[in-house]
Image (cartoon, rainbow, N blue to C red; front, side, top):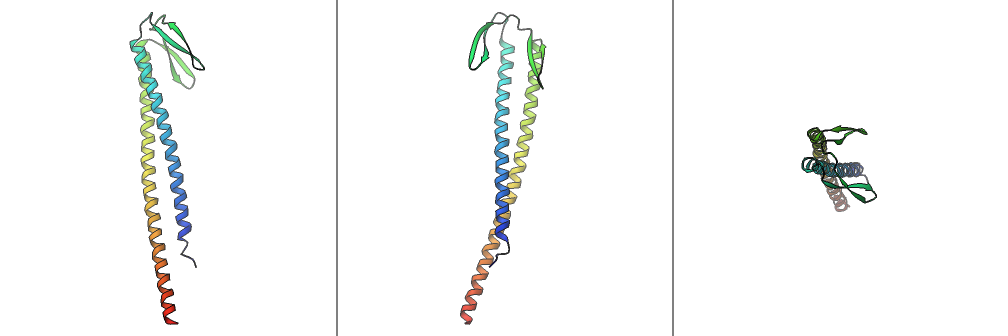
Length: 155
């Protein structure tokens, strides 16, 4: 006895929902990484604005090792421009470059949040469709049971 193929459709919808949820989780993870980058940029802006020539900082060497260093000249800051390019900037230029980087990160976060909102909408539509299919299957099963009861009564 077939229920009109509704079970296959329901399974496909469930698979689509799971794929959307996996995609959404990946986007949320990317947002977390971008927020961490944004915090790093904020820390760099604060450091550039507050450090003074002659001050002492800890410079990472890699592998969790640091060395204390004296700032020779805070007016010369090397800023990552992206795509493996860096540039030397004065203090104001460095802050401006970092602020621009932060704006780019914010823009990407907003794009990802919009995409997540679209996924939420699509997921809701698919869940509504799955519920409709389930209701149809229940109705078909009830009709089949009624038909079987009718046949038994006729016999």
